[in-house]
Image (cartoon, rainbow, N blue to C red; front, top):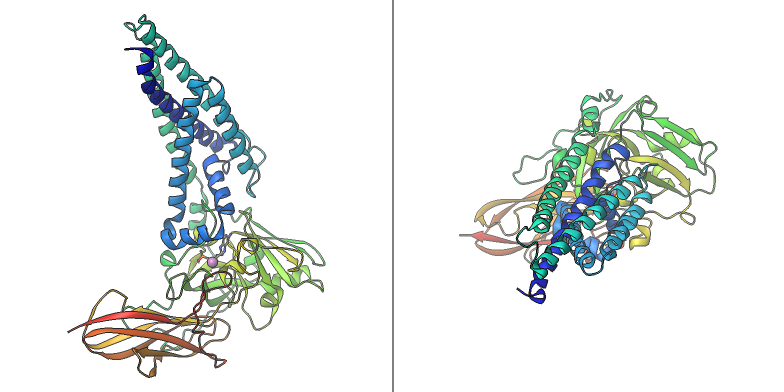
Length: 519
Ligand SMILES: Nc1nc2c(c(=O)[nH]1)N[C@H]1C(S)=C(S)[C@@H](COP(=O)(O)O)O[C@H]1N2
Ligand SMILES: [Mo]
């Protein structure tokens, strides 16, 4: 075999060496992160960075196409990109010594920059990417040296019999590769399992509220296929930019109220719940909810009015906005009036449907504001309320294509029959939910094909901030039929018919479903 013909094969081995060095880089960083700085995982930091910089239409597409799996898809793509880049680094190092190491150093610097600029950065956050860079580079240098030795053995014809370099390369590759996979996976698993916040949450006892929401007779209809009045926590939609769920110990949690206030204050979790909790029933809606979509859910929350907490600090005149901030750096801009008006139940919530907030839904404290889309009001893992002005401060989504202020557009949804699920002819219940937070639903109307609008039966409203259920009995005849639904709110306004996309301030339009009735 001549030197030229062996080359492609060695390039492949070099790519493998690169891949293994990349794996060692990540595994070493994860291991060191366990000790030095839990939040400083290069792959997660780069993932979070990508989430923050991807253009708004791409993000929208990801939420629509992958739903709750969007983060897994992101991590998978990132893993693939890292694998390709590592393989290239291996080939570079083989062709031009130092070039591959330079690529790893660059990866270390870039991921290090992503880590130390995150809101959750700690003093030692630079250590894990540094450790990864060193470990990855050492392995890359050793493996490529062995590989070059192997190639010389082959081309010179000497040593080939002994095969020292070949065996050395293969053995080092196998050991380094296997150790990296085992150590990397174990470090992640340990990190997840020992984030003791799960256990702390399990042991946390939230005091009984001073008041409970009265659920009136008839608040929940007995019709198959309609969303329940309250959405179980494990079925509640989740939307956020957090690649991994922030873990906050309530014992160390602090809420800072600052900005345009008479005095900056800091509250502990006990300070907050010690003020006394009340129960609130509020339907949350995401601006990304399409007509007929499921990014909306209802819960009973225990919380403290935001206005009471703001009053402790003393809001100064001239302020018109509260910028709420999450531990992960996320921010929302809420009009001051939506928080302070006596008529609105804007709260700092600590419990959801009878248990402490689930970690994914903002444990230990989040905001919930009736009538405003989640992105401008419902900050999870809350750490700061900054009293300010719209002129001075901007929230996370504002430079990313969404309005700074965004009241919920009232809407209605068909839950049953489901589009694409044929129903037998005869009496069919058409039903769903409708919401008009802060105003209330007056009625829901249904149109079959081009027929007259018929008024649906409503459940008894718990309050104006909670969705109502609705249904209409229909004598369905065989064939295909269009079912259209619209709501009328208690101000007498009819739901907007004209379709609008979710950006910049929420979708609108009447939901129209095609129902197949079998004979
Ligand atoms: N920290 C943080 N809070 C956040 C978000 C976020 O990305 N980060 N997303 C907001 C958006 S867009 C919505 S719709 C609601 C969703 O709350 P849920 O996930 O509990 O349903 O949370 C809001 N609070
Ligand atoms: Mo949202």
